[in-house]
Length: 102
Image (cartoon, rainbow, N blue to C red; front, side, top):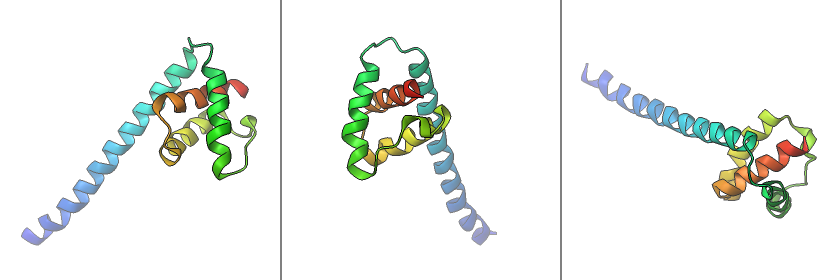
């Protein structure tokens, strides 16, 4: 019985960590969707275009903004925000640019 509990605890901790991570990502996506749909900053599109050009071209060829759907860009931005070390505002700006160009 004790061995079974000792085997279950690491699995439960791993599952809890995964769940917390997914909730964090989902919260960011919801916030990004809200910001993209209630865009009040007229400069956000141009800042996003500049951030896109400065950061994305460093690692791979520039993609056409129409190559992915809006929902696919949201997923890509969540992933690339970490990889490119973007701030939350930069990520929202790039998302607004990509979705505005679609």
